Image (cartoon, rainbow, N blue to C red):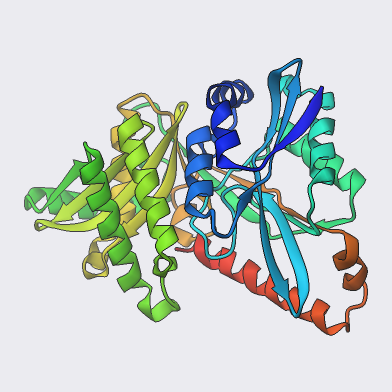
Amino acid sequence: MKHKIIASLEDLDQHKQEWESLRLECHSSIFSSFDLVRIWLDTFRSIAQPQIIAVEDHGILVGLAPMCMRKHTAAGLPIRTLSMVGSGKEILGYSLLSVMAKNGDDAVLSELVRGVRRAKWNLMQLYALDPTPSTVMFLDLLKMGFTWQPYVEVNNIFYEFPVEGDIAARFGKNSRRLLRSIRRDLERGGRMRVRVARTEEEAEQAMRLYVQQHKERWISKGGSIFRDVRNTRQLLEVGKLAVRSGTGVIHEMLIDGEVAAQSLVLLDGDVVRGYRIGMVDKFEEFSPGKLLIMLVMEDLRGRGFKGYDLLRGDEDYKYHMMTQERTLPSIQVLRGSLLTMSKVRNFAPVRMVDERLKLRDGMLKRMNEG
């Protein structure tokens, strides 16, 4: 058994079939799928390079840690950050990131940790991980082998569908009543309809409209993450992949003939992952975002899905649509010169690094709220 580091998209492309077989066997989320990992690495290739740790046993892939490396400087201090693919400051990424080890094998996980140790980083930030058994054990091994500290903790909120009857039966009482009332009034007046993107062209049109609306809504809140064209490309590619491969659905709710809310969900086994939800402020009185989530739940329960994952974040509306909540683990590790200097709190470059890390944490939280 040995590990290797996949450091290019060309090398990554050699592993698609065995990657997906291992992911499905390990029950890792769709955010660790080959296609989504590759889209993200390709989109953000100018700032993040693949550092995917793969473990093979007699030529068979048995372990994966989908990681990447980003480099920058702070006050002249070189920072080489190792993180999971799909995470980063002001970057449209993923949640529920995980490592994969065939049968949860301790030897595979230990080899993955050896790969982490070999990679040339001085800051490791693992954020919003999916607490699968393999991922939790991997984190335990890291904690035993490195000087670590807690990182930004976020909650993951989930809604389990009622088997039958009112899809909103487990919502908070006030939210349930409000959404029922709004829906009833809009349907009686023939003012509301929902459409689904059927082609890649329709998916791209829907996601471009989402970006435009997001920019408008965030003008007074510090600006939209879609000012960065890479984030726009990321959303377009994920949306098109979802429609092309059948791994996701884009819904749009129209009120009086105008798009009032949009949703992009990814289909992950028997669970729906709510990747993006957006609304137009003009229709705020109708709570279009929340109403569309309810309608999407209703549609997908009818297709056999059992629950809706609202993913990370502590927005109020999520707590009114919740049956389960859990904390997603995150850790931060410093080593080398960065660890040494971090012990000298008054050293100017270290203070600057600390300030930037705190700023990064704040931005990550802001993204959760978007």
